[in-house]
Image (tube, rainbow, N blue to C red; front, side):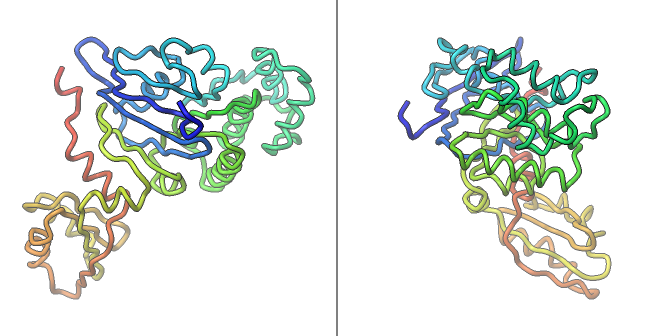
Length: 309
């Protein structure tokens, strides 16, 4: 590995019985970059994160993380990684400070009280430090979990759907902190289902049922998809979704409030599908497809690996 890569893995494979949950995945991320990891539930995102940081051993493939071999030097990778799991994993019958002090002892950190104090201040937890963790809302638990992840000053953060169930204001505060950490050179790999969060990442990797299907910036992925889109507005435009969804050549037709997005990779098929509905006060306008349009299109191209069992 050179200084240009924080994560550099190739052909990662993980199987459980007859099911391949990660199927020859390549991923290369530079230091200080935020990479969004997206895909439907059950697509191997969490398994991939765990193989990268040394919690799981791949059944195939190789690579490095933070300069260490992901198979032979797993403990070295773990010491330099902060991993925030989907489920809150700290003790609810301890206070915020007690939880952070416990984590600091696990890492055998020096200057324990000072480190914890600085972490509390940074994440805005100082005024609540003596509050029982079990009484916190989802947003405050999220901040505490992040504080615990960065307490040992890792070089890599792996965040597994960290903002699920958190209100928009708390999500924005969280992402502001993630960008601040990346600005210090910390590499971040974050799985999410939120399109607005995907757009806040420097780059995106889209995995569907074990296979990496798209990689690049938001604009690159939209361009690479080859999708064409039209947006319909007017009385009842949103109600046309069921009529257009299964039309020949149409990859997606979805209502967004009172408007309708219709997408296809075939411009002629798109025109044919909407032609019968160019009346009754409904107007159609060509627009660039959204990330959500692209991901729905990619999901439709992927085969659910559970169906092969």
